[in-house]
Image 1 (cartoon, helix red, strand yellow):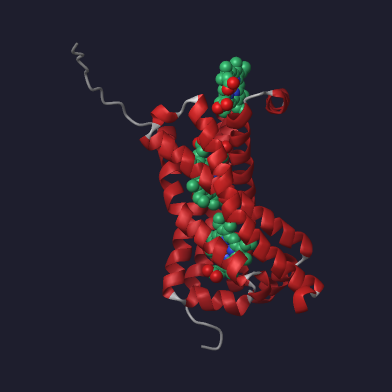
Image 2 (cartoon, chains in turn purple, cyan):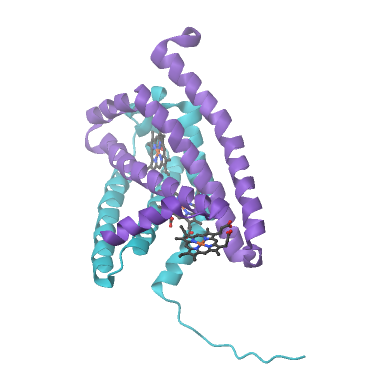
Length: 139
Length: 127
Ligand code: HEM
Ligand code: HEM
Ligand code: HEM
């Protein structure tokens, strides 16, 4: 446990700049998505094991809290995917580009691509959430 | 200047293979996981999803195969990811082995639940 504390303190105080927070964000988004996925596979399997329960679980997913969580989930999977491609490409095909200068640049590019993908999706999801849960836009 | 190199065959360890597969599966997960998420979250949306909808899709052979690939690759990639994260924090190799086995069991049980649902449903409701 003390090694855990040291690690977490290191994460908070270490100044690795772009590479450091890109690493942390990749880790946090990956863990977030796998936690969601474990629950999601189980709740989807209810459609076979207990169809009534399936619709009840979906009612929970429709709540505003989960709706906001879903918008965050979409960000996580977009960032994790773009950044994961960056890592996989550099590791497998261009390891000579793992220099501090170049990784800094590619980290920013990954973040911009993520936002370009995420913002329109988030807008559409927010629109649907307001439409169904708050009766806005004629819902 | 000439350099002579002598190729040495080194047997790949399990960890190296797992490291490589995290990268290979990454390329497959982009179309699979993103495609599924954009369709279900953004285009269709949870307000239009219910048991009928899910059953109808799983009964469709094309989407069934798509879902089987998604289930196999996304969850294996994710659970091996969890294992790699924990390996950074657990110093004791024996503890790590026990944790790995627990993760393997969790992965297997949940994957089986998903696989049974995907394979058992072959007809839309009332069809
Ligand atoms: C005592 C331990 C460590 C030492 C001495 C150390 C040292 C360094 C140095 C000298 C650099 C290059 C300087 C710079 O980027 O400005 C660097 C970069 C980096 N370190 Fe560490 N580091 C340590 C721990 C860590 C840890 C724990 C992490 C992960 C959380 C980490 C992740 C990185 C990353 C991702 C970069 C690249 C930064 C970039 O591209 O800007 N390092 N480290
Ligand atoms: C969308 C396509 C995806 C791509 C391109 C991708 C790429 C990657 C890559 C390259 C790594 C290795 C990182 C490293 O060793 O430094 C990784 C780690 C990981 N991935 Fe993914 N992944 C994707 C989807 C997913 C999904 C769907 C999940 C969850 C179910 C997930 C969960 C994880 C976890 C937990 C890790 C370990 C994180 C760490 O070591 O810090 N990934 N991913
Ligand atoms: C909150 C957003 C999501 C919604 C509303 C959603 C909805 C659904 C639905 C309705 C099904 C039933 C089968 C089908 O229609 O193809 C399903 C199955 C599945 N989804 Fe999602 N999905 C979401 C996000 C994700 C994400 C992010 C992943 C992976 C990273 C994922 C992985 C899967 C898998 C593996 C299955 C098959 C489960 C089984 O074996 O029974 N889903 N999803």
